[in-house]
Image (cartoon, rainbow, N blue to C red; front, side, top):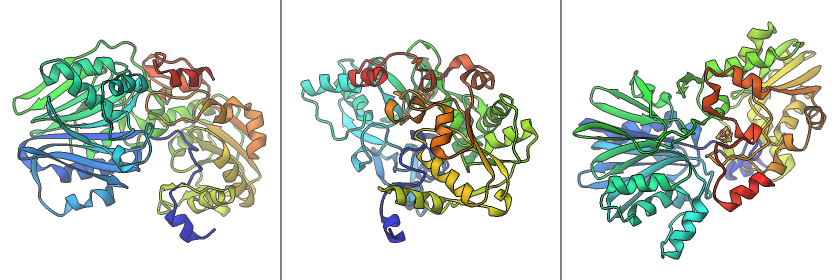
Length: 479
Ligand code: SF4
């Protein structure tokens, strides 16, 4: 195994699918005055990079056409060309992608742009359409040709093939036919549109300032564009922005708001607001709830950086045990590698996480992470801490045990692969070599949320807001 090999392979450093997979980030900008929209999209997408690192792209209006540019890779590589030259426009959309549906292939990158009988359309989607197979079967039988394996292309087919006379009616008909999670932005001719599914699984914010209207998955993208005031796009809401102003309508009644609690636990950036909560504050509350669930005993609270940082601060504050930097993270080792063998995976973790031996040696460590999927990486981290001289290691997770797959835009392995379906916390501790393992209970998680009834907890308790229509999803639930 050589470093050269690590560099050229595509690996996930923290073990393959060791965390629930991120989904995607979307952004849309409308400007009353002509502006350098692609440059603004670059900066906004750059702050949303944590939501997807596989591909990046933008689509913007240039005169009579929509220009689309996308590629596999990070925003700073794919879209850097938009920093060098003024490109006047008045509207555009952007996307960063993690593939929950379809593979990591260029044809699955977004935005997807088409010209059809309803006009010119560009689409960027965050979420997962859970009746894709059924709808695709129907479209195939009618002769449809798909260019990608992503579920988002389906939406454009349905709009184009709709018998409704105009785009708006065709869009609403389509939104009522698709089932699942979607926060979406679109360009249609000279209009910018944003919409969120009736359950509100994925976040989407609307901000306005000085003639600029911006939609973004998280408020960090609005912050970088210096837009201080915003509101959420409501579940089931469709917003249209054009030179006549902003129009809003409810295309479907809100059934049961089911915001993805994992956005707060792990996916979103700590400085962002998501579902009207500041992510860092919510994570601290989860960490405090974890500490308040037990008689804490340890010498130091150590976060697994960066995902465990906020919860560890909360745990330390609530328990009175000092917060300490026991592990540092190498931010330059890249985010996306795939190493095939066990030894190579271990090397990847060692490259990414480095122990601060002085703070660890002889200590009873309370190690805080946000979630546990397969447990393979935790095993390596525990080994690393033992080698650095830790006396005891107690792993604490600021989320409940993940036991069920997700059909709403998050990549969670099958039930058999989830360690909490096979082992009790005590068995997990033995498997990973820790002295103890504990999870935040679902009840405690709910108590740390101000409006828990508006959240989805299905990957913890199997209580899905609705059962997916597609047979393959249904069989995954019943496995
Ligand atoms: S099942 Fe889990 S990951 Fe999926 S939407 Fe619900 S809370 Fe989020």
